[in-house]
Image 1 (cartoon, rainbow, N blue to C red):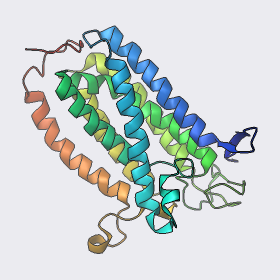
Image 2: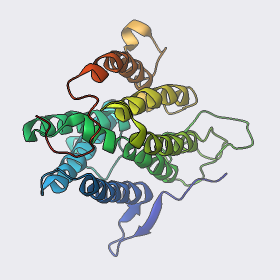
Image 3: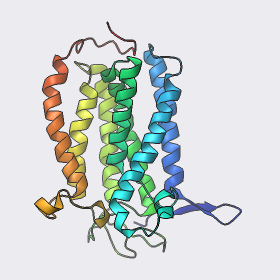
Image 4: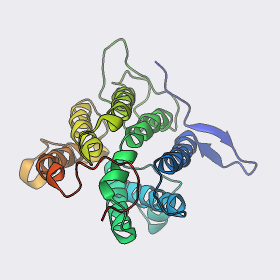
Length: 274
């Protein structure tokens, strides 16, 4: 297989427009629109809710993803201009995801909106965004896999691709696209069948780290870094280490969340329950 072209087109001044940036921006905006429709269908949310959440998601994605990118590339940057240039690099999912979750949790607490209800609503949209986002990675050449001699190996040929050129690699972007798409379908199926508030979100937080841990075994990009390298050496990549921590936290949440107040009230409205 041959990868996508890293640039879609050039602006009149000659500036290339990256495939990755266009797809990611489109995905974020599309998910905001879909999420807005879903909150209106459930009802009970403030009139300005969708707009405020959109700001949180956009800023969280931009800042969190950039923090992850800087963490992975800090030693390779020569100036603050490169650090602040949002057009010069990519993004990192875990940092972006964790910052958005933390910011949304604080916002929902402030607005007195049931956190578990919104997180159950949003959970299927996260892997949906991941599936399309990994398609964008095929354009940039980021998140590439280890060299592979398999019939489905992918080859990057463009000189500006971030992946090694002209050799077969594990299509790790496609691996994540496939399991993220499957997880999306499963979570949409699960939401109307949940037995307690927060179940859909916990299901995502359980299944995704497992798949991400496995996928990283086939990744070939060294920029991810290693988790607690001074202590564990190069045993786990940073995403694998974060996946393990998430699973430990979620294992506790599976016990606590179903026993929380109003956990069995399955009204999907965003209105506060007193």
